[in-house]
Image 1 (cartoon, rainbow, N blue to C red):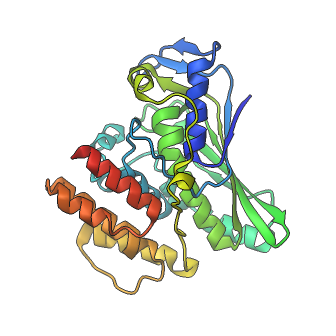
Image 2 (image 1 turned 90 degrees about the vertical axis):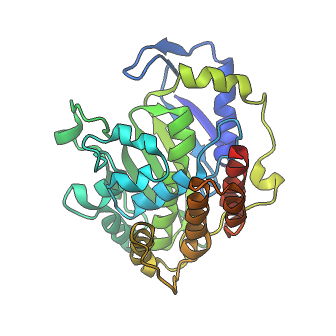
Length: 330
């Protein structure tokens, strides 16, 4: 099995690109979505600082607005399509009925199997930090195996474990994946979403944020995406943007006791305009809300105003990503 290890998503993305360029063992095959280039064995990616989750690649051009909001959407346990299509219309292609998302991870964690798996693993690891039964299930063999749905989970399970340290425990997380697109999935959306739920769980349990392991059974790139991107991406390994620009992530969770309520209040505001004051978790008023307001301004073609609003985002990494993405659109 191949292993790619790095400090954060920016480093592992560059290492993966080097492997794609230099490996002589890649397999070119067909898939239901077009020709792919695959690694011949599973791939494990290790993130040493998973909260440094923002990929600063102008060539890859990740949509930071979509990635961040979808991460909150998952933690909130939502399944609705309308939230996602506000920020990425193409997500409608993955809905069977135009209303719901069948493979929505957050809904599967909280509702799908008739129990709230997130609350259960939090309770387990609070009582016993070394509990080896803290597993989150996304794959439902009664529904997903042989399914014709447009969206069955690519990521199938999450394993959580407490790692003893001198001053308590760190929460390590392993995510298993059946089929992983390196460009759009693994080093795009997955690095954001799963590190966000990782940080949320660590905060609720009372542990430090440990390492994030992504184990992908079929790591691949789509040739129609990879070939033009390969021509644009720089060669070699470049300095880590988090260190080069002295930026840092702000905590996702300040008050875990209030987070579940406040993430729902945030989505009430997003969809219904129901404003809320007095958030205990500053990620909502200081990062999420100005991010959404900047997005709305951009959708109204008020690009300069959108950039100014994006500069109000408190979190330095998300602020940089949103401003640069908008400037590229300009």
